[in-house]
Amino acid sequence: MSETTAPIPQPIPAPVKKKPVSAKPAQSSIHPRNKNAAGYDFAALTAVAPGLVKFIITTSAGTPSIDFANPSAVKAFNRALLALHYGIRGWEIPAGYLCPPIPGRADYIHQVADLLATCNKKVVPTGADIRILDIGVGANCVYPLIGNAEYGWRFLGVDIDEAALANAQMILSKNPQLTAAVELRHQPVWDNVFTGLLRSGENFDVSICNPPFHNSPDEVMAVSQRKWNNLNKPGAKRGAAQPRLNFGGGGTELWCNGGERAFVKRMIEQSAAIPKRVMWFTSLVSQAENLEHIEVALKKVHVADSRIIGMGQGQKQSRLVAWTFTGNGEREKWRKAHWSMATSQPIESVSAFDEPV
Image: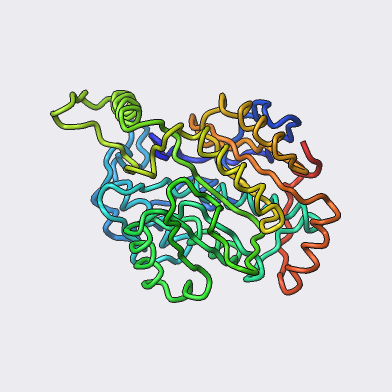
């Protein structure tokens, strides 16, 4: 999915716990542990990524920024953020692939860490014992890059696009510290999310997903035009210069039949077939109106617990939906069985997840 801007983050208190999954989450902003919570340090960014210098502009307020409508600037900015905060070198994506805003992706990782902390006496379990399943890892591979750097977790990144996986593997090859931490796997069946994916004996603490949320290429085009207009760029007609997605993306990254609602419902249905292979299933949900339909799908498969977590940066609002088929006692057994070697990172803001919704 693509976002229109990358606003300067502002620190906020922990998100507020909400009860029903279908309830609208509290308006929330960047996670307090996000490395960009205090804003962007352009001096430090250009020091580690000199190529960013040519994209820096001065805003009307006299502060440094970049033109977030320029895909090349966004890519250079991401490369600099990954290098500065997470030690990633040689990050590159092919033309036309999604170039996600790094602060937003980091927030998802931190929210997952808080979710795991609710199963671990309010401390985040860290280290290679924690295994994360990334559905739709993409050519950019950002969730494994951030999650391993922040918490030392291991990842299995899955995608239906073999070219995307090849590029993700290229990124990993340039960062040898990730060789043992990130595995990539092809899902050959378009309609499958979890079905046929896991191998014998594989278990994961959390699955994550940023699903395609458009219904068709035409819908992608319409949204792109609206965003282009909002960025005060000249309009475009079919057959002429097309409005560009500043964060890129195409094909399976941006749309599927039925859009986000259908994809997440399919994910829920297939998760019920592997209820104890993944402790927490999660997905981003971009469109608030999809929550009531997701709640119905969760009730149909009789989940033991489900939660909604508000997320947002600036004007961009989203939410994370989490569900599990394990009860509290089973989660404690999971912790003892799977996290025996995990270390712990105390945190201050997990109260939003203390009780089931």
